[in-house]
Image (cartoon, rainbow, N blue to C red; front, top):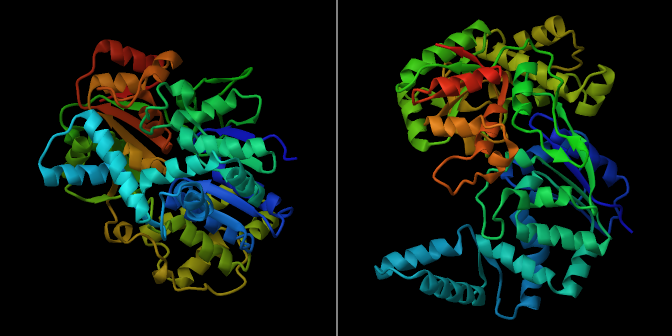
Length: 510
C-alpha cells in the first residue's frame, strides 16, 4: 500500500525544481523495472529543465517519463484506452494543438452566421463526434477523454498499477479534470504521489468548474486529510526587503501554520521602490536605469513587465525596440550552458562538484551568473581567459581543457547581438523566470491597488474574467526580482495610494 501523497507548498525562489529532482533520484532507487515513475509539468521548458538537471546526475532509465500533462494523458490514457472505453473514437489517434472552439469559430466564419449559445454547444458537440470517428483529438478533448476513461474502474486500476511514482510540478495549475485523475490514482493506493506548487502563482483562467479561488485543486488538497502537507518557506531568489514585501501578500493559513517566506539570499538588500512618474513610459525608464546603475546591474539583467500588451508595445517603442524577449520555452539557458561547460572543465558532474567544494546548487548557479557577466563585459572572451578566471578568481581546480570553444556556447543570440538590450515581457510569459532588476508597470491606479492589496479575502475574490486585473498577477510580477524591484503606474496615483505604498515600506522616488 502506498504512503499518503505529499503536497509541498513552496513559494517563489524556494528551489521547487531542485527539491523535486532530489526526490525523483531517491525514488528511482526503489523503482520496479516493470513500472513507471511519471513526472508531470505544465510547459515544455519545465520538462526540459527537469530532464537536463537529472541527466547531469544520473542516467535516465527508460521507465522514467518526464513530460507535459497533455503528453502524459495522451501516452498513458488516451492512446491505449480511449477506443476501448468509447467506441465513437476510431482509428489511429491524431492530436491537433487547438481547441474545439477554434474549429467551431472557423466553421462559423465560413458560414458567416451567428449562433445562439445553445446552437453553438450543439454544433461543437457534433464537431467532437465527427472528429473522434476519424481519430482526431483536440487539445481540450484530451482532458475530457482521459477523465472519461478513468471513470472505468478496470482502466483506472490498470493505469494506476503501471505507475509506481507520480510527481506533479506547478500543482497550482492543475484543473478539476486533471485533479480527478490524480485523485483517482491516489485512491487506488498503489502509487506514491508527490505534488509541489504555490497557490499565489495561480494565474490561469477560471473554468466553469472552478468558480472561486478557494476551489482550485491545490487548496482543496491542502485542506484534505488524504494529503500529507509540507511547507517549504525558503526564498533563495530575492533579497530580504523583496521577500518581506512579498510576505505581505501571502499569509495564507495552512492548518495551524501561516505561510511566510524566509530570505536565504545574502545579497545587499535594497528597498522596494515606486517610481513616481506617469503618463509617459519614457519618464520612468531613466529613473529605473539610474537605480540599476547604482547597483551595477547590467542591461541584460534588467526586465520591464506589465499585464497589458498595449503597455508592452509602449515600452518597446520607448526603448527603440532594443529589447530581448524572455528565453522561456525553446531557447537554451545561458546559465545552464555555462554550468555544463564549467563542470566539464573541472571533470566533475553536479553532485560531485557540490560534495568536493562543500557547496549548494544556488552557490554554483551564482558562480555561473558571475561568469556570464564577465562574458558580457568582455573580460572572458576565449578559452584562455575563461581558464584564468576559473583558476585565479574562482579558485577552482581545472583538470582538462575547456571541452567546447567558448564562442560556441549557445547563449541566446539576441543577448549577444544586443549587449545593451532590456528584457521586456508580459507577466504571464515571465512566470517561472527571474531577473536581477524588475520594473512592473500597472496601466491604471485601480490595477496597481489590486496588485498591492493585502487583504486575503479581497485578493481571493478577484478573478481574471472581471474588468479589473487580479492581485496574483502583481505577486507573480514582484517575485521575479532578485536584487531590485521597482513598481510604477501609467496613471497619476492619489495620496491615499502613496500612503498605502509607504505603509508597505515601499520607497517613493521621483
